[in-house]
Image (tube, rainbow, N blue to C red; front, side, top):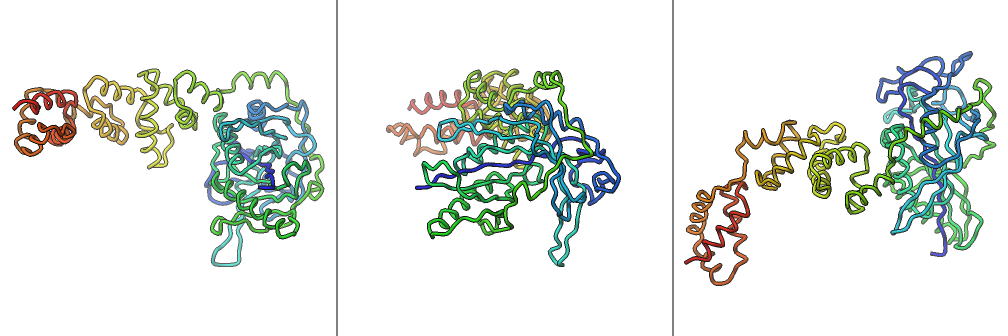
Length: 477
């Protein structure tokens, strides 16, 4: 409790471009090894890179969405280091002159909002991938990912705890997905996070010795790794030892961080401007056109859902977690109205079915107008809420309209008073003891009789009619 945690995050987001940063090779995930390569992304002698303009556009989108200043001139640099999956022997990145600087993202924890600064956003290319053989001491190299365009987003050391770090990371991911420039998939590596973490005595201005954490492939693991590392550093200082500046890996199976190597500094990489690439000059009019086309971002949409639709903040968080889900909600509300009822159905019935199949709402077989039609059938007394859930499951798996399913399966509400009265007589005759107990004052037994009628009608009896008839018949001797 005598220490303060200081965290800064470095996020690498893979861009949703069809081709790589410097060549026309495909960026599609999952292709056979070394099939999406060419002399340029393999770093062959004599080749020249050509900048993918779409990557610059995506970088500007993110810079505008995170309130950054966009530099009129930015410079690509070579970051020199050797690794088997880095065919050129260097990575093309940006160093002294990044594309964007000085932005921020707001995070909300414990009911208060804190602003996390963004130091810089710059473009760079990705390395390949090493595949280690579990049976032999051999590693294979797949260069398909080499040259894939990345944006690196570096935060200020403003984050003060693991929970706040996870929220910042989620907010950044939501922005990237809403902008349609990254799919945010941490498992596939298209959204990756490294963390710099240190602790210092409370009230001290100088930062403590930091360690860098890698290999965190989920929001949960980011929080767990940071929690562990903070506890480890506190234990080191408590024992009178010094924290070593190093890079550590998160071992998920052991729930612990492990030393990997000493932490490199910028001079270790021997940065210098890439002689094959001219500086990037961004036309101000292009920036204005990109800004005018930006979508409504998650934070603004969440606030609007609370203000315009009267939704609780928790519901708004869920319904705006994906742009496609928010669009689905609003399309249903436009057709049906009653935002709270629509939200409840989406968050319970729809998301349960989608999550069971790991399916995106963009591929949902139930269209918004079909869900609206189902809700109107409930309001009109054509089907009960319980039957509606059964109808919805059929709609989800067949794609058919609710009216067709109800008609074909005979699921319409039974409101014929003559038929219901006869069924009530049967139930009373079958349960004389409960009838006498009800008439003796145990009025809670009404629910028992309603349940028996629902059982006989397979849930199709109109509850209001059943209740009225039961009270009338049970009250008479």
